[in-house]
Image (cartoon, rainbow, N blue to C red; front, side, top):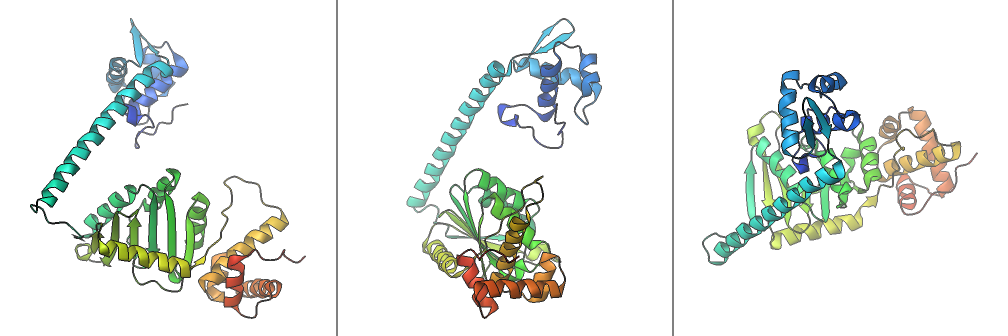
Length: 343
């Protein structure tokens, strides 16, 4: 069945199809041959008017995806028709990459000739410009995204989705969270989701700055963020240089000191886990909160239980670990699995 996702790009956008064209083509695959009236009766994409349907069909015919015989339209087999469009799109993308390479070489030649001084640091001002640069650089990561996550939280809507997209592309994501973030309402569930998607997460009591590192090519360092004054926002984009290397070494040093957050998010639509598994999952969440150094009240809030219940769970876990302090319990549990829960 068609997805009717007019508000978003269709999956075949890379082949040159609009969301409307993709949806109508899918309708024809299910119901060829068909007249314009018949296609409209099958359910056109949301927002597509009947008088716009002939133009969409004409576009599909021009792209070789639809044939017309009199008043009837029929879909051409996707294996043949779409393959041609995809090969064409791949060639155009290759030409675009080659052109981008030529422009970069010209830029580097000007730098080498002293016409353009090397840009070590780029200052970006204004909330919109900072968010745009952040999204642009993050999506440009090829191999690895590293981040020090602390206030202020200026990340634009969709940044979590962008990180998930990077993980799906095979980009490694390593995140060090400041304790204060873990204490925020809903933060633990967000971290669980990202860890489930492949993110490596650790925590420290405090972090020196808010920092994003994309491969060894760029860093974004937030300087100012004022929610009430968007024009006052400012960030630094650091290009390959000794400064970028120093920021990379700073992250790696903090990563070695940070404690891992080992969390397992619930599988979507999965049946409730068995008692032993549920208890083990609760232990993992409790361990993550102990590692983060949260208070009993904050732990209770994150687990969605009462204060006394949280106290009992912490005491039980410490007893099974043979730990005398909360910190000792968190450290021990972070680097080894706790003993099985008691009945």
